[in-house]
Amino acid sequence: MAREKVLLPYNFSESDQKAIDFAVRTFSPRAPSVVITLFHAYMPLPKIETSKGTVMEKLTDGMKFVRNRIDELETEFKQVKDALVENGFPPSNVKMVFRAKHKDIASEIIDQARKGGHAIIILNRKPGRVARFFTGTVFQKVVSNISGKTVCIVS
Image 1 (cartoon, rainbow, N blue to C red):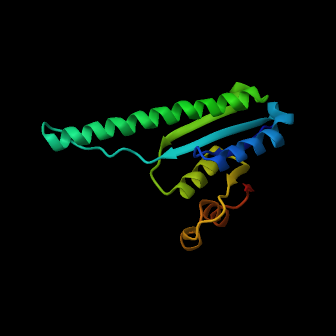
Image 2: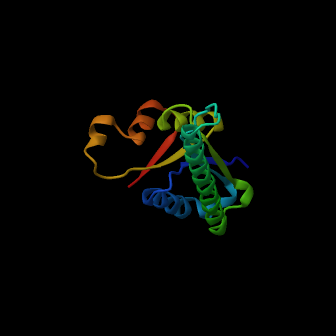
């Protein structure tokens, strides 16, 4: 049986929870035939040479704080997977990609969708913010730069 592959980018926002709820409502009735990939790409920590010195010690302490925060987010990310499993998805059908990003987030999503063979991408849209009018949004960039995939926008 062919499995439908769904990519669900997740950034720990209230809007992302709406996307999760949509995925559960839409795909849980046929959960055994659906593979969901949760995707999060975070800003990587810079690689720096640390040597003895007050400034470098402060920088190292700050980097430890950020590394701890990334670890906390990864734990929360695993809880999202657990929630999908609790809603009927087989554990083997819920994949997680939690990694440092190398490009802008829209490009990361597009690359993951293509590389992973995902037929469906579920994105969310945050209403408001005038700045988005000028910079564009992730979902606008994804929709305008991908073809052959179904893109669901949850708002």
